[in-house]
Length: 226
Ligand code: IPE
Ligand code: MG
Image 1 (cartoon, helix red, strand yellow):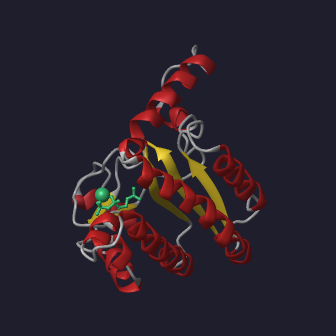
Image 2: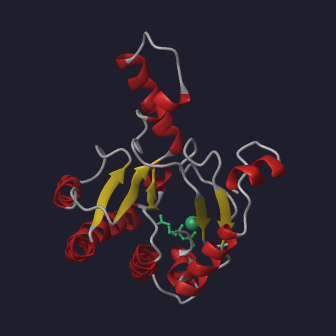
Image 3: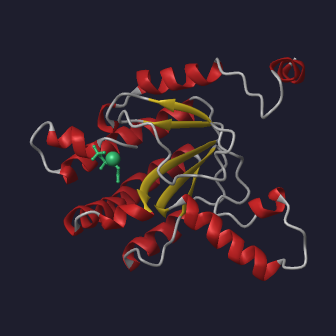
């Protein structure tokens, strides 16, 4: 979800104001994908590198997460959406950690869609913490990619099919590095607060026209999909 800062700066608003408008786009996005029948949606809300931003912006973002959880929880419950957070929680304010845990517990039985929010998340951190736990907990076993999946923060979730980045930048920025090994990429040239149903539908349409081969030849892939 990239482009909140530029959106605000173009309007001579504070970057924090941009993040507040970004939250509106986030709400539209969750509604759109829930309506489209998408089973798992992961939002990259705050990266492990975002801690290096100015303190005031970091604090504004953390405050926004607290209010967003509180404001959105009733709707998530109503829509049957399960909430799950991934990332390193220790550095987050206790109040935020507490609300995250409560929201996860309250939505745990929901199964319409799983909404994963990556908060304090880094793809390298995820792989590293999984490797450490894997060594500790199954040192005798041979390393198998599938068994390793179970140690990642995304354990139990499917691999990434479609990865959308807004804001015109074309890079992965330490998002789901392991999980996006065969993801299709869609880069939208629109700033996050301006994202609406039309842009999201464009991304879905783009995905529909991709042939996924997973290392196979085009004709092998066609035969499998027939
Ligand atoms: C939102 O966009 C990303 C976060 C919530 C951290 P940015 O804040 O990165 O916006 P730009 O890239 O400066 O425009
Ligand atoms: Mg950015």
